[in-house]
Length: 95
Image (cartoon, rainbow, N blue to C red; front, side):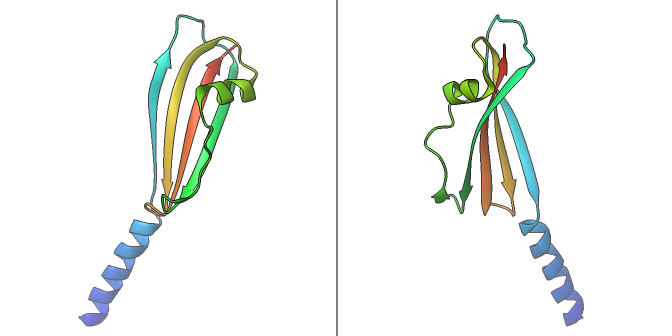
């Protein structure tokens, strides 16, 4: 019985830390037509403290994608290993 309980606890712990989640949220839209270019500015944080960039804004994402007319903007948050590693992205679409 003790072996079964330990096995279940181990599986639950592994599932919690091995989980991956992703959430995409639309931030803004304009009347410009949807283009075929995409620019991404991202940052990664470990334990919510270490790492991270101070510039992951819309302007940087547009510049990285060579976009001068923005059609819409999304924000993406991805979590790996529970809360240990988190990636944040600003995604800009346009021409």
